[in-house]
Image (tube, rainbow, N blue to C red; front, side, top):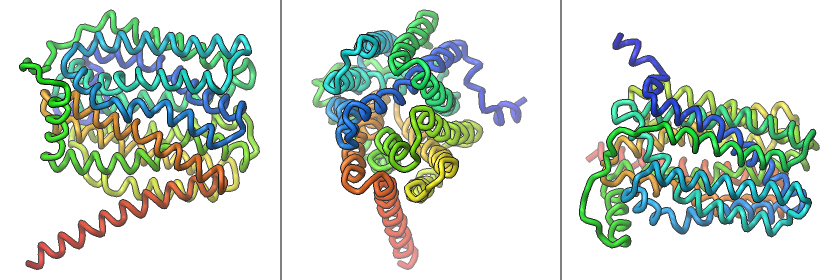
Length: 411
């Protein structure tokens, strides 16, 4: 029985709370990925500018960059279930507004910018809350497996959502993608009504000023070496490794000469690789996060981004993106679990807000970098430039660590 438990990659699903939440997320994330396909396609169709396209992603994630640290204090102070009720309802209303604008033919590029910015503000609070909420659904013993399964459902939706979005856009129009996403948030809201979290593990303590609590959280990370190095690694990959919403639609149109369906299926390839990576992490979750995933997965990711940039055939591009997804998710899932298992409950919300900051908040920098390169040099160089930056930074870090280890060993 113990061996079976150790090898069971779905052990966290034994918890009723997590099953309900997990199923609600299945539905919601499919809708989210449909919008992730439709929104950049809509923005690029309206502007025909990679740089203006990148500005949408930049504005959507800029609030994460600005306000994540404040959000971490909120997550540590208030009930996470109530926060999720607020954020998910807000998402429903925002996406419904965009759907109505598209259906009525009144949508303009400025509307996309405004709604993306508002969604970014809500997402700033939603991201760390969802990450910190998991422990209340499964407890500490199955936390790592639950984190990996969350990544699994995210990436399974990444397969179904883009493919479905491509079909829906080509046959019914983009408006139905936004409407589907709006309705999908109701699944999470509905599941929350039936979830009764374990007694909140949040530590009761006198409340300090917000700035002091932010400072305490940052000092906790600074004085915990494994947290500090992991956050630094995630920052680099967050900036240069996740610019698909900018690079893939332009690459699809300009290089591969494909339309909406081709774009959607390309991101489904990315999702397939990501799902396999998430399942691989889930299967090994009982043995703890592997440091090798933090060190070598980014190098593989970098090489695959470069390869994607030089591909010429649709299927080859899809396979390269699938492998890119595998190593990206292997890395990010390991980052998430590494941070959570090395964090005390008192600081969990603030640590995960920093994770949200570097995971989502680095996107504006990456979007603007890849958008500017693509605007001036084309989508091929956009992919290649991102890969080269990751490779140079991580290769340099590994060489520096090796030289320091060699010097220490020789003393």
